[in-house]
Image (cartoon, rainbow, N blue to C red):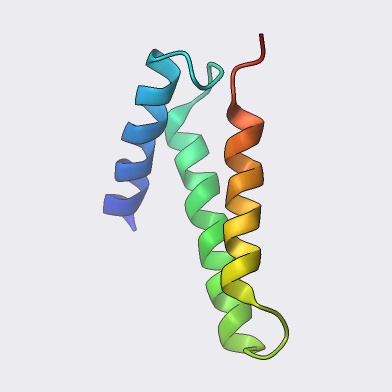
Length: 72
């Protein structure tokens, strides 16, 4: 868990430095990303036929990342 969170925090921080993402707490953003992914894993285990959990997770993560983009 910590390794993944740190991995994503580093990527997010690079995006902030490069001006791709708005200024934010990269560690907290990484925690949000990992929490979202874990939530979909739990839903998939609890209700495997309830949805295409992989697709939903991907779309949700894409929306989350888009929300971090720096606005002109």
